Image (cartoon, rainbow, N blue to C red; front, top):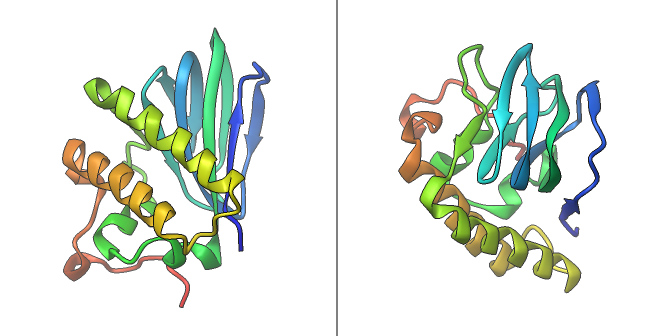
Length: 165
């Protein structure tokens, strides 16, 4: 199965909605307000947002151009694109205090490159099991873990991780 990553530069606001898949949103430029579970976050260049299926969310662009990538991961494909339970734990069902947004800061140029390369893998017909996909996701998730280890749960502390067998 092919994975889906989308690039979007349209300033279209999106009202409250949910998805039946995991979503990772990465902001390249511009600023938007992302509201997740009734909490608003101002997101600008280098913001990385992790959403679970059924997380109610909305976006309202504030500063243009608002350019971003969306990585969409079907429920039954989460394990297919990576095998590290610690790194996948960022996609667990989030509690009320989960901070959804990570600022990549000085790592922005790297993250820009990672997401651009994911687009290249998709254009070449890559799947979730593609080794290039796993390598890029490892770079994204380990980079995120180094900045925000509090978003990840060690396997021995997991009470529930929604990963399909």
